[in-house]
Length: 351
Image (cartoon, rainbow, N blue to C red; front, side, top):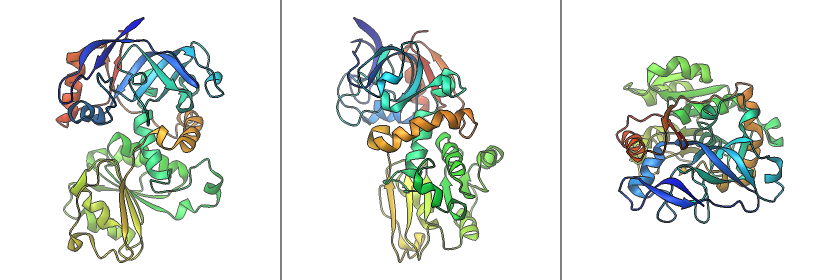
């Protein structure tokens, strides 16, 4: 049996309609009727630069909500039933992602990295805004390749002094920035300094920020250091690529080793006159907020996140809906991401 899909046939060309076979679930897999395929800015870079492409024709997307229509064998898949609505992140670390990505009518899901929508108190569309956005912030804060803070559900978290910890979030007005703030608050961090557009100040403070600094101010670095002195060792930049990450590095302590985690490529070096002496060194590194890269940590996330959502500790993001696998409409969404004016978009493949 075949199904409808949107596929990329060549890097740098528009997505086009295609037909694909309906996959069958293997060990600890679920077969989902795709109800929501969530689009994110990186999907534009998939189309135009080949980011995450594993083979052609390629099916894009990473956020999925679906109805379980098939259950493979395994201890992780057996907790789900036919008819359950689940949400998850489809990124496949090794192998071909085409059977898992959601811009098609049916897709597979790794049962380790999904949760039941019914446990969240959210709608299907609201749940679809969680996987990529919230998981990116979670991995940035709590993975060993990120800042390495103890996950809130770990034994180590009980003895870690989160209340005395300071975190800088650059790009705090972005969806992932907002999620990172909420996750930091959930962990117990009291001093969360956020650089963002000042128009978002009220919402950012509601999410948990203790300080909001206007990203357009002429003295952003000075304002950060007026709060932190020379003690900042934890920072996350959710929006800037390469050389634009300079403020995050400069804000780190000059006498203690600090770390800036980025969600965009950390290309290029900085002028020491701009970033300070950094006598103890510093680290700047990219993390990918994907479940398969951190399976044990991610399994804890997918176990706990429904309760965090139901209790209002983590929020869903705003979104718009696109009905049907309409190549022209979806390509326009990706064009808007490219042009810096996109918004979180949910595609409903069956409408």
